[in-house]
Image (cartoon, rainbow, N blue to C red; front, top):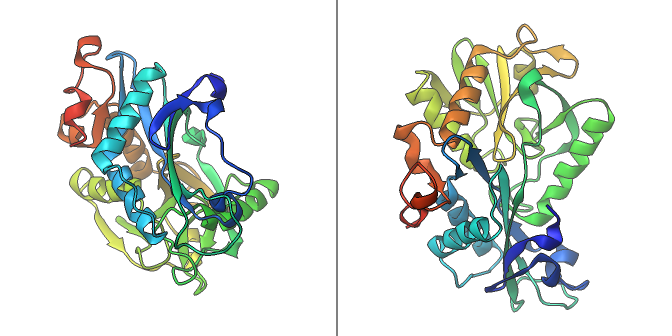
Length: 323
């Protein structure tokens, strides 16, 4: 699908992608004064239904991030959910998709500040698959680039400008033969991947960095925290981790909207456990897949069907799932 063929939501109306222009002097482009979300949609072929995963949670977080930038969108989270669903229908998307809402300072003027600068809000929905083929397990490395500190730029908000450090780390990792980078805090604790939260499994315990270690408060992360306890009966600890704990872990895996659950089998040329995908990681991969495809009734609260009941067999009509 060509981008120019897409219908998008831009600044209060539906429009063609190619007609939704951003000026060269736009504040958000020049100074990174924007925030965004990534929302995945999963196509269930037998049901002929597209499910959006934790749609409302993503738009709630988008509005929280916007407040950091002194932006107050006029649309509510429920209204933004409805726009996202409408884009799926208007573009007749019947495959795995990615939805990118973005709010940014749009005034075309020079001057570093947040106050007194108008904003725009856009939503784009397009076909997309996972960043990784994680069926073989990923190879990662500890990056020399550090995770942005909350007192420099709020790490728990998805701000466009702070992803420069992630891009630097990811490219260095790939250029050095790895799949992904792991960033440390300035204190030397494990933070997260370039765009994913990180978990380890050791001696039957699941451990992940706390939100106070400059990580994004991941929606997939919160999902996995719940599933580890409720479905796998594992004790979960949120605490600071040292890099050497990664090397000595039985299992390591990433979580995130773009990657789902992605096992890591090697870090800095050191095999994790026996160098194969572990039992906990494998179980979570399968569980997460079934949930996002709308197969598990007890987790229907997390998925929003996009196609009307009249054209698909599945959950209730999506309008009831976003309010």
